[in-house]
Image 1 (cartoon, rainbow, N blue to C red):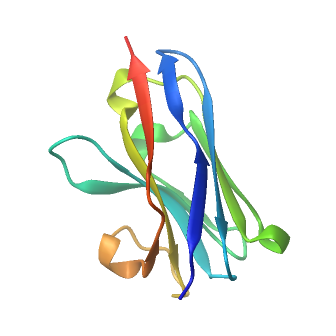
Image 2 (cartoon, rainbow, N blue to C red):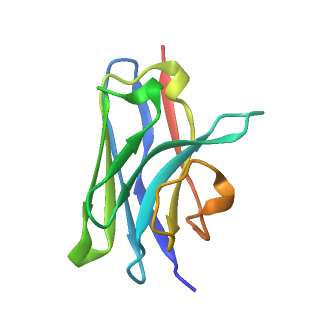
Length: 120
């Protein structure tokens, strides 16, 4: 069982920046971030493979950057130019599968979630 521990998040005004980090207890092939707004489904924000392949949601391209330190089993999400619609609980997720998928069902391990609130 892989455990994921998240840090970061908080409250920021629109246009501001926040960063998230997530450390896994063991190496997994894909690590990523999901977002869940109140009353909505959990959607992929960004994911990165061990080899550095990256997938972003269209809504965050050009504003968010995902990166990974494989030696530390840690994934980071730098969020710039934040918008109120970026508000939600951000979950770190990890998958042992060899491809990056968007479906929550493809991820076996989840963090506890961290709140990101962007005020207008």
